[in-house]
Length: 145
Picture 1 (spheres, rainbow, N blue to C red):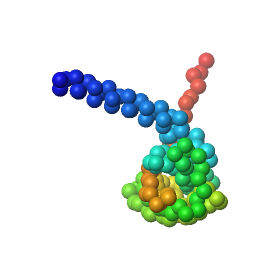
Picture 2: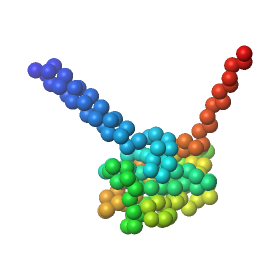
Picture 3: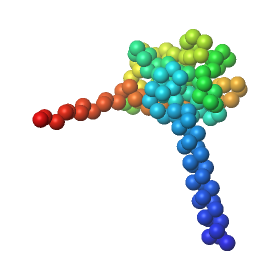
Picture 4: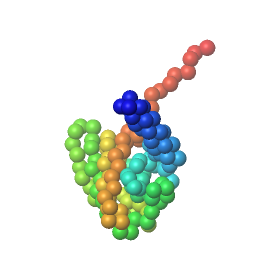
């Protein structure tokens, strides 16, 4: 009996994991440059969040459960920026346009990790991002003929 239960629990866990992975892939979660604003999207249950590093600035977008842009009116939050040298900076999210925020910090675009925490419709949401713009792409040399 215990053996059957273990098999059922394991099967359920695998099914749940595959559903979660399929759902996340449908919203481009974790795919660099695939968000609605050209940034990277992460889960911020029950919402999503998008980060875009552009022109030496960091832009944040809170997205709905379907990863569609939401108006920024009534949303407040902070970004905790972790840098390669180990120091951390906390910055308020400043409204930018009607659906985004910008981080008001001169060094924001050089973060290693960015943790977004926001209040959306009275609920706290959060997401963590790596700075893929800071990752150097390896140079691939063509073979000589």
